[in-house]
Length: 306
Image (cartoon, rainbow, N blue to C red; front, side, top):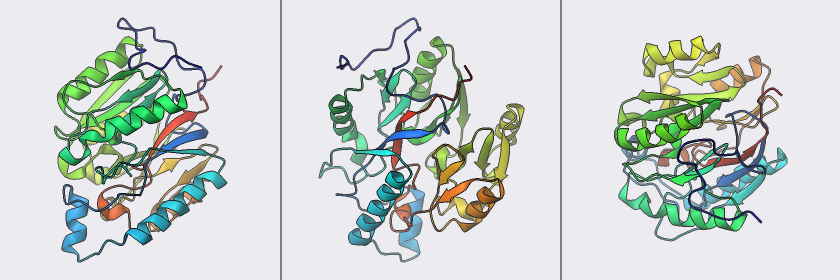
């Protein structure tokens, strides 16, 4: 048993990485993943995607959403990934987007602070889940807001974190940045317009040194930063961003999970030698999140070269 704690972070840095949990990249072989529950999910009009769905006359069907959620879980299991479900709470309709209430680091999960009023209680079930899994928490964000969809353990030694001033605020970003930099890692901040919800609708790591980015929707400076790190870019058209087409999960071993509707990116991934796993989540994405939004990796194999 590991001693469960809400703060294992060492104030001056030097926190030891967890032995059995954690990750040092977005693309290392995925072993365990935390998934948000579908039980109480319904679309809310608090983001651009959900408002667009309403404007287009789309109707929510919970039975369809639940079946698609189950299909996604099966896809993970068939890919050799252990799935762990956050306990459902009837007061929390957006728990399904399990990416946001915590973020995993090499040193343990950070419990975040949610921006939207109907999501602020999500910290409690996720803390209970970490306690049940015997995963000690690195620390808890107390300054402003920070949501997991803006946070990426991009590759060993580098965190990419977007902040729009809403779902992730400059204050929440700065607090997290100060912690991570004391551990000797780089934190790249990227300010963007809150229309885009989180940075993971614009950027995704598909494999080592390979990213999907909507080049037309990000600043040239971010594109150049990726190129300076010798990361190749698959450009995604803007209309696919509106359908959460960039919101994908690298499974490791040159495999990627993406929405069935995103045929364009699937073709480009296959052209780069990647295997594509594509569950249908078309009843879930109009709520504002795709496969990346619904998961928080708990354990990936290290990709640091020994």
